[in-house]
Image 1 (cartoon, one colour):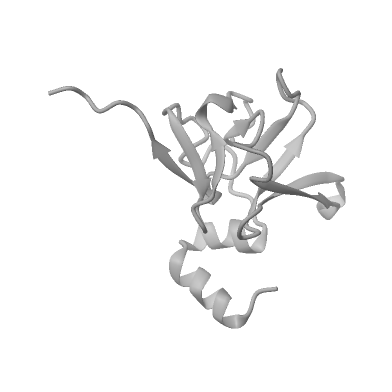
Image 2 (image 1 turned 90 degrees about the vertical axis):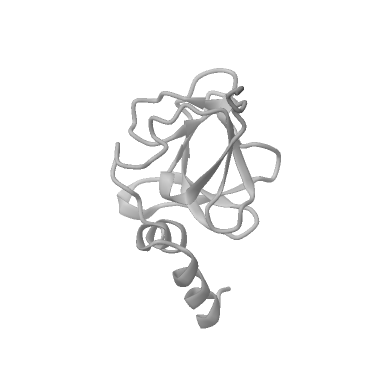
Length: 135
């Protein structure tokens, strides 16, 4: 349960879009987020708390307009909750550490899991592990 002080701290830390997505459950527009067409090697982390969420090796092109992953970075990285909003039945994905709304998971992804974790770019930070160019 968050307190008014927690809410104030999140508003101070996050951009308005990040706050709307992670703390209020909003969804950014398709093909608008910084990571929907991102191809760097590294780790996607929670924008709120920095927890490791997804590995770039598990990212794939879903055509949905949002970053999509076949699985979380590890067991317990995300929590799943039933979502019956907007007249649909879906599974919401939240950060296990800080309970930030990340997106949804659908059973229409590729092998090896058959899952598509459809995640808002606004909920993510990226740690690039690409090698530094030699000088």
